[in-house]
Image (cartoon, rainbow, N blue to C red; front, side, top):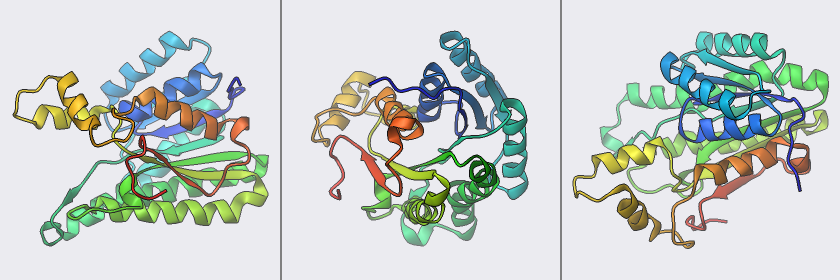
Length: 261
């Protein structure tokens, strides 16, 4: 089975590093065009250059933007659409893991988390769906976390915003299925990314990266943490014609770690 995007254009938030960059690279190598959205202009340019090096035929746009506001979302979408001509695939991937004891999370942190993870997705979906409806083809992928289904103690606000993203996924899938707009969520377990690199760096026990990964992998039924390329391959399936009968689902990409199917 050969997955191809046949020139489809994708906007990917959080696209300069980690899973976002992995998905953008996979999409470009499969014949798609990509607009990378993130706050850091320098990181975006490096990411765009790395994609062009392995997929020279792809159009690659670097779009610096802060999508925590309506104006930021609208500006990012407009720039991506102008660069690529249209947006066929929207990947809402931007987000951080804000968490802590419930009573320590103040109003500002709640608002920041919801604006980045939930409202940015809402706003970008509103921008993308009209064009998808007109063309009777669209793909929306919301990147969440397995905490959306099985939240742990001290996991707010991130688990709450992720759970809301899962509800958004199902509601939009049901509403826009007649327009051939497929909406799915991918729930991340422990997968190699910048977030896990930072967690390793903060661990003061002196473990090497390989030792630390092996330790983390013990909590996963498959016995290892995932690779960003494996996550990107799942996203590519959902974005392609081969994923044309999958909508309204939240897929755990976690090596079996989540207790909820």
